[in-house]
Image (cartoon, rainbow, N blue to C red; front, side):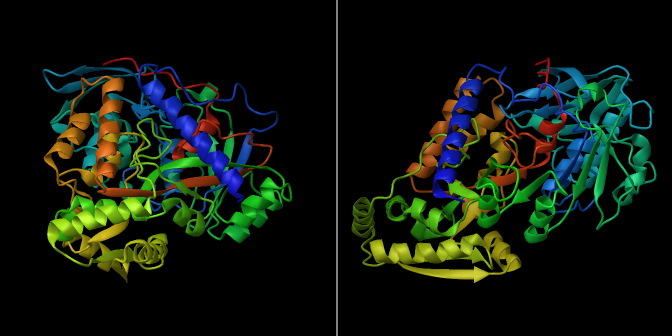
Length: 531
């Protein structure tokens, strides 16, 4: 991809983040763009998402984009988290939060049905919550299962053990399955023909290695607003084969990573358009300030941070699917504040001298750890060279397989490493979960009562306004990068090639299952009433 193209996209992503930040500060009506009507004759589309789900159970499925797509098409949710961090209606039409008794009362829409026409009731919702707790537990940690029950056919009481900013998002990420689907205890092994879909689509009988065919669910509560009658998903891992299929007209949307393929579409050599969307992930250099005494010194961290020409590193080594990170949060987040430290070799040398003056040391030797074959390994070697050239610091790069890497992390022997932050909508607790005090990822711990308190307040204080939460998270980002605890390096973008059957994926700032939701609905989501 041409450098000017990526620059334009980064500028657009930043503009988008500013728009979201403004909406989070008092305007919750902003919604992603939605088509007014389906394109003429485009009732069927073919996608290629380069992977397969590992399970059809929404509680267990893995497999990246394809799995997230499947979860969002086949299964309905009580509500959904939107791009501006608000909640929108799905199977529940409203909810009430009783803080005194620590319960949420969710009111389902009347007349809900599964794809086979059988009623979808509060009992199915309770069963889904219990199944999620048993199968994964990742979204039910705040739920009091013993006090979670069906009040009547359309009313669910969800008991809460704790209440935080993450609670509503966690509950809203539980796919609703049929109670009958779990009664024999083998839901994890169910085949596609067994699925009782609660979402916008059903799936035709499918097995690994074959195309997945989604068919519009006529019993979905919002079926009249679903654009496409049929969506076929191909899973071709090899991009060369995938791109050839697109070039020959066999697919309407594909994911691209190779610059030459992106350029072919942009330059008109292959029909269609390229759209690049920001992902919700930032990677950067983090230091273990909990276990490694050397990195507890702020002056040394700041010397390293100012000695790194991050823009040059990302431009040289990362490729078209990556952009320069500005902070802990990605530019697509409504909470992103540009707090990255500037490349300044002279200032870096000043900080290093302060470190020498404080400690009495006359040299520095540090270790960076990285995973075999990863982008972090390449960048670590480039960092090794830059720190030697600017500061004369000796850097050892220890490249290891995944098992050894994470074992070293668990033992507090990772020292410093380029690490990703977790993805999770725009929920600051999910996105920042690696930094939380109870996280097992010691290299990411803030190791500061002030910073821990600031993060926990943004997560647990439900009374913060949008302006207050945004301001606190901006302060948190400033202190994380301003003390050299985390050096933002790059964020992911996802590239799509689209032919005329799909005009745009504008308004979708996630490259996973939310993409298809943007495509299939012909209206903006409805805000969820309640509070």
